[in-house]
Each structure stands twice: as C-alpha cells, then as structure tokens.
Amino acid sequence: MATKLGKIDLKNYNLDGFEFEELISEKRIQKRVEEIGSEISKDFENKIPIIIGVLNGSFLFMADLVRNINIDYEVDFIKISSYGNSTKSSGTVRLVKDISADITGRDLIIVEDIVDTGLSIEFLFNRLQEAKPNSISFVTCLKKPTKVDVDHLVNYVGFNIEDSFVIGYGLDLAQKFRGLSSIYNLTPKKDIE
Ligand code: 5GP
Image 1: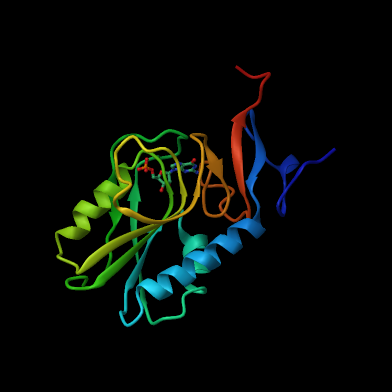
Image 2: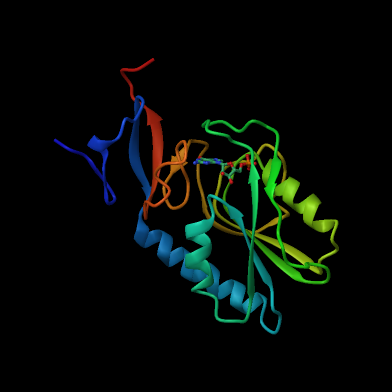
C-alpha cells in the first residue's frame, strides 16, 4: 500500500533506507506561528524591524510568520550553508548570499528554520553585529538541544524538539521535501544497517 506524506506519495521517492513519522502537524504549526506573530507584533510595536529570513530552510516559516505580524516591517534574506547535502552539520558555517538592506541602527529579526548545534546563529549574530544594528533578535521554528550556548540569543522558539533529523515545512533531505506542510522525523529503517 502506498504511504502518503502530506501531498507527496512516498512510493514515488527513493528514500534511501529512511522512514518518516509525523512530529508536528500543520495545525499545531499554524497555531504556534500565529502566537509568535502576535508576540513579535507586540514587542516591536512602533518600530519597523527588518525581518531577515535565513535561506533556504526558513522560507515557509518566514512566509507564514510575516502574514501573522500586524505592524510595519521590511523583509530581506541571507543564505548560509553548514549541512551540504548531509544529515549532519559540517561544523563550518559559510556565507552564501549576504543581505542587501542597510541594517545600521535597525532592529533585526532573524528567522531560522531550526537551531541545531547553534553554530549558524552564532555566526549570524557575529556577522550582523559588525554593521551595528540597534538590536538583533532570533526566531526559530524548531530548536534542538544545542552544543553552543545560544539560548540568550534566541528570543522566540516555535517548538523544542529532541535531537533527531527532521524534514518538511522548509526543511529538506538533500533539497527535497521542503514543501511539506507538517514536520516529520526521519529515522533509518530498522532492517537497514
Ligand atoms: P546549526 O548551525 O544550528 O547546527 O544548524 C542550522 C541549520 O542546519 C539549519 O538552518 C538547517 O538548515 C540545518 N539543520 C539542522 N538540523 C536539521 C534537521 O533536523 N533537518 C534539516 N533538514 N536540516 C537541519
């Protein structure tokens, strides 16, 4: 029998010995995004923050989040890379595409898909700080227990999750599955070494 994953039919994919399990449903995600959007709207009232999406993973979360924010804001994007096509962080963060906005003196809200080791957030904070913005806040859809202590930098967390590889809602497996509306745990199939 074909297994359905959101709107994707898994039988069309070579899953390389992995299987998926729903971790956070679309409904729970949307409810939480609404709550975070209200919090941000309140916290940044009378300011015009620049909301910076960290590509590629944050694109769905960012799109949903800004539609739940009811104050004025601007939008920009930055792209960094630490995973390549692997399911483990390489430990080195690389800037792939810089922001274009002038951020000096501005309030920045950086939107991440997931905080894992914490290295990306640490890298982004250090880099953006050089331009002397007024403030830097981080919002992440998901957070794992981090190796680097970045808790003081992360202001808004959608869901704290355990340390396992997840996909969907922007998060990929070798660039696939980003469009899924829910979040899934990816685990190696038991019968495969
Ligand atoms: P960090 O630098 O905190 O270790 O990792 C941040 C980046 O690694 C995320 O923005 C995301 O692109 C990627 N990443 C970390 N954990 C996962 C995961 O469970 N699934 C996927 N698809 N990407 C992840």
